[in-house]
Length: 476
View 1 (cartoon, helix red, strand yellow):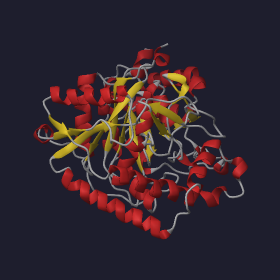
View 2: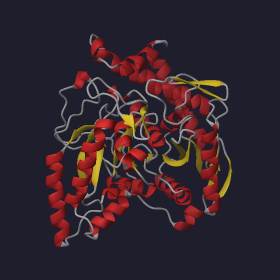
View 3: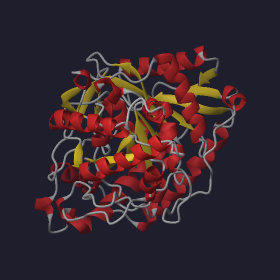
């Protein structure tokens, strides 16, 4: 019975529909695992036990009656604590928001509930989401289920740890610079950064306005690529509260269109080194799509180095500009990780309107240049990050004699940041292991608004390579 918690979300949904397991049984199994494992992981902010039990009993009655049920009926999910879930705390890891409680569900949460999902609770994040490691003064540090001395990543680190360890079947995080993809890479699960506007970001804090509407999204996280597709389809669609909202229906591509896709690949960007195991994971993914019958060719988009610099202006410097007035006079109450981020911002000249406008125009120039490059290559494979999950607090690493750093060039997270700036859908799935037996993911990137094709190619890689493997912690 305990192994049920590690099955794919799609498999659990099927078992629930077939009444091989009841929603209440499945929920109680997950609650027991949370009680046992979350003291080690610290993935949760709130476990919404009473409402989840009430919703599970309702789902049980629906399934028992044989009435039409939603595609997620009875499936237990979690939500990153920066996304509104009615009645749950939405402090975004900050003492400065310690009294914040969501008054209503975000649209994507409403859509999940309409699809029958059970919301277990919400998960931990770094303060104001400005870190690739999940730690804050309110709820503490989230640990990686593969090695408790290592980070599960950020800013959706709590979500990734919960899903990887079988405390949740799947859920949603947010991503402004790799914040669903890096945690997925670090914990051996899957995540999708959708094209902005495909999945409503309404009800997220910080709000997606200005440059953040262009680079920030909410996206699904789960143990398999097929799970991502089911979650995305359940919540996709326009919403008037999302400044980037696009009236693009979720549509699965035809088999012929998928097979005709030429897949590009590159192992590094020639500026930011990656580990040999990361190269091996990219090669394994390329070999997998070739075995599946796809044509491949080397492909490295132009302008990537500039893309990272422009991303830092629109995310880092603009983020500091927005946060600084909030924390002014309250510096003693902010976390060391947020203080570190603000220190990096303040080490540069202040953001000006001219610099922001130059970055905005530069972003559009790069997007226009990438479009013709991807006319023939519909999807490409590349690293998700330079290294596997790092030890808590580490900020500098050596790869092949070269030094790579945390949020300083050459930045190990560059590989994720590009596609927030450029607006491409990008998926991460497990494709290898490090010498320390830590998971290594690869990134599958597509053309804007072709998220569904990215999922199809990711699923083809997963079928060849085997996909998610549970960490030892999850099976003991």
